[in-house]
Length: 178
Image (tube, rainbow, N blue to C red; front, side, top):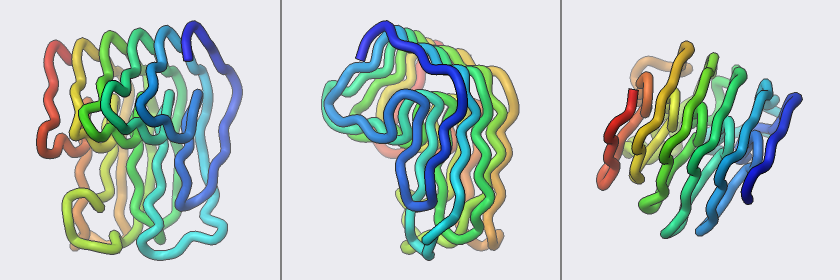
């Protein structure tokens, strides 16, 4: 997906992948895309353990050679569920399997509320970040401005919030990011 833009609003649902360009993308390149949108979801049909993913560009990016490059997101991500765990990021909610975010920028206002994870492992944490909520990939030359707020239904459950990445997990790396 190259040289595209979207402006408006996107509404997903609990337990889904929601993004400004794509909900979920595997082994793909998204380059030079711009999104100006408010992204939300309702909790219809939500249940404990249903992971919910939000990203300004893509909800979940996974698979080898997956890249988001030269993209920009300007908008808000709002979700108030308390039932399902959430991952929210200004560019990608979930960046997995050596996916790459490079030469991107985001101006975000993220305000999300997550629920109890099905398992107590880091991969099931509630997490939010300006670039990516969760990353086991590469974040390179990314700039983020804005605010990020994440609340969980119970303080006992893992919550990770960061200006760039909420949870930078195994194999995850960041360079030249601000």
